[in-house]
Image 1: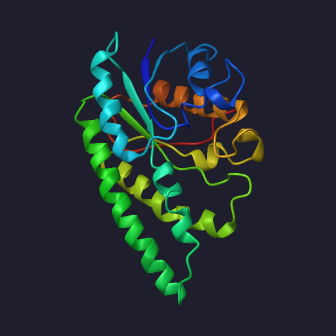
Image 2: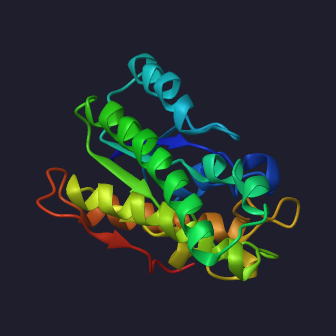
Length: 216
């Protein structure tokens, strides 16, 4: 039985938005044929700068972790949405703004990965999903540079990736009470993909692998 620690934000800490027992951590604990011990250190609203405090709590866990799975960065991008609505003179000027935000995100994301890798526990990361109901095509496209950072940094470090863009591609995957959170259905998909990753991915991975087609 693997001990999986979930780190990051409300992608994993989604209990307030779904019926009891259908949150990601509960779904992961009850996967058919693959029971897991799960510790939830993720906290709703967390940003990359909060990961140091979450990592510090690893030392207080009652048992050593076999895997760390982190979904973080979405709230950092959410904080830029207001600025993304500002006027730009040209398409290139807008792209330059995105490039500057991407560079800042890359710096913070690299720091987060270095911090978690220093724990010497197998690590998997998640992309930022982009099929949130009501999300405009422009904002969906603007997420791409940030997901590019996550994927590139994971490949450089040979880390497995949960591609939430593929896993949560339907409106039903998002909570009706808060459309930026996973629904019970989305949570089941995420938990199944984590279970698949832990079951199939060697703990000392020789290369990165993307997981994104687990059944609901």
